[in-house]
Length: 88
Image (cartoon, rainbow, N blue to C red; front, side):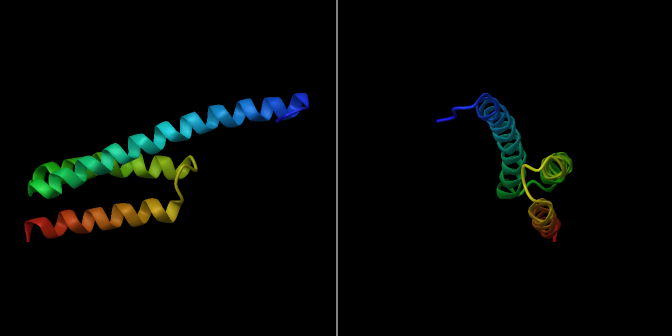
């Protein structure tokens, strides 16, 4: 357990950051899920709209350090590829 004042403050700060990051990660997962559901339903229009909404959310999470930049890029790339092949 934290003994010093600075260590106690660090624990509080970490708890706050963890809560914010958890919220952001959850939000990103929700956006990705909407794209996945549209893909599963075979609705290309809905999938494109969901992807358009999910992409900035993923990149925002990457810029905030919630997910790695390459991970966000990979997810966007793979989702867009799946949306693209849906109509073909």
